Amino acid sequence: MIKNILRRTNLAALLAALGGVLCLGAGNALAASVSEAELRDLKMQIKDLQQRNEALSRRLESMEEGLAGQSARIQEQEKKIDEKADGNVFGRIGKYVSMSGLLEGDLVFSGDYAGSDTSEITLSTVELGFDVALAEWANAYTLLKYEGEDDDFFLDEAYLTLGKTEAFPAFLTVGKMVTPFGDYNTNMLQDPFTQTLGEINEGSIVLGYARNGMTVSAFAYNGVDELGDNKKINGFGLGLRYDLEQEDGLNLSVGAGWVDNLASADGISDALPRTEDDEPQLTDSVAGLNLHAGASYGAFSAQAEYTAALDSFDAADLSFRDSGAQPAALNGELAYSTAIQGIDTVFALGVQKTWESLGLELPELRYSAAVAVTILEGATVTLEYFLDEDYDLGDGGTGDDGYGFTTRLAYEF
Image 1 (cartoon, rainbow, N blue to C red):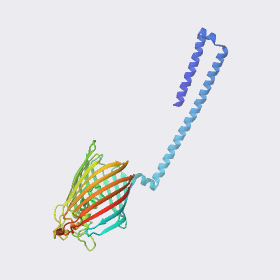
Image 2: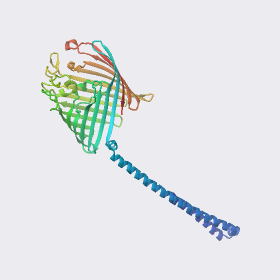
Image 3: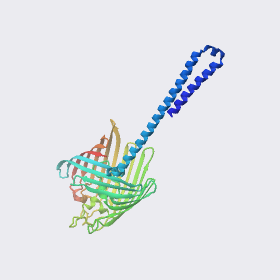
Image 4: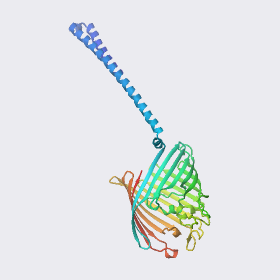
């Protein structure tokens, strides 16, 4: 392109010069004023200009050939790099697998109902997640986890999802996962009591439909039974959720869930009687209900969740006041997000209430306050204080208060 422009420019100059010569020859007055020596000089200048133009054209052609050769070499090198990556194990992993992680360290001060104070520094959580894009319509996820009370990493979740809801609304998920029974979202460091009563993380199969913000799920899972056989399909459930995002910044979320065997929730199964093999066992299964809602607008957000057993457990499984317990929990939170000196900060307040959950080692009331500050990209410092009120003496509790203050440094990638 540059060569063509220069050629056109030099050609225009040459034509202009020749035109000037013709005009000099045609005009009597001008011809008389131009000497033969000046005409010879002009012709020599024109010839020199032609030679320079030809030399410049040759140089441009050489440069273009060099650039074309360099581009070909670059493409060949890139091709070799891609081929080498495809033939390398780590290259293939990086192409199909993405990894995420979380590390949390806590400084904890707490006091129990008896008035005994304790303090502890602990590495509370380590998580490694692997998301594998097997194909356009298939995705696998695995989560390895370490928690402070455990000595080793354990497999927390591992499942395969078939489907691409952007193109087709139905999907199928199979593996070990948290069933879509509740939401359990929180701004606090401690898990909400609704999660203790409702989170079922077992071998499961989920068939779902997602379209225009609406998600409907039907699922089955390995549930606790009277024989303590947790490898048996003994639980079924339904989940419904609707999410709405408005351009004006208003976001809404509502959902409901039902399961026919709430005892499979981790917080309940841990409190059940054990077999000789230390497996939880159940006399009769009890259904459970979950309702949750959340809203945010601008810097403010609010959320509420309720989880409850729909009937009483057998007194031999879980009791309250010498009869079968019917546990329930309610969680409500308010939060405000802002930037202080350019640092993202979240302030949150929460209150929780439980019913007939003394056997699950839950307080009757908990008041919480938390502040989370993002100090670096992916790094957050959170301060949380909570005050617990135990069940009354008449319910089998102490009637006393307990507290907890936690400072957590978390890094997520």
